[in-house]
Image 1 (spheres, one colour):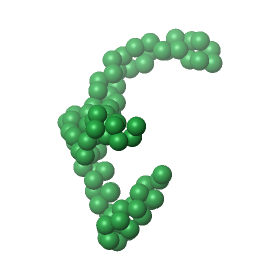
Image 2 (cartoon, one colour):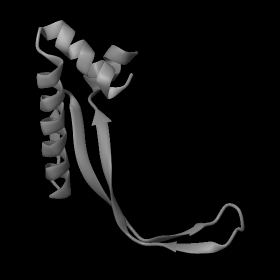
Image 3 (spheres, one colour):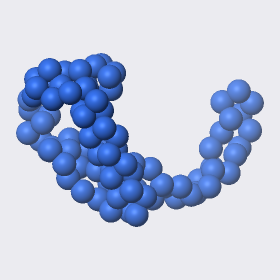
Length: 89
């Protein structure tokens, strides 16, 4: 499912315009990005969002086998709640 199909589904289900739904989705995405950029973890609708520090490590180029130094970075971690996992099963 694409973001446009989600917007269509939300608009049809709740009787709002696609334009308003798309605008809300964009604002929501901006808020999430801002919070994660500040290192804040939060929970929204049974889904936990957080930022994890990934330490520097050595990797390998799969084509040549050459060792590469990979610098430290951060990654976004998204974990569904156990209730959401149960619904999917």
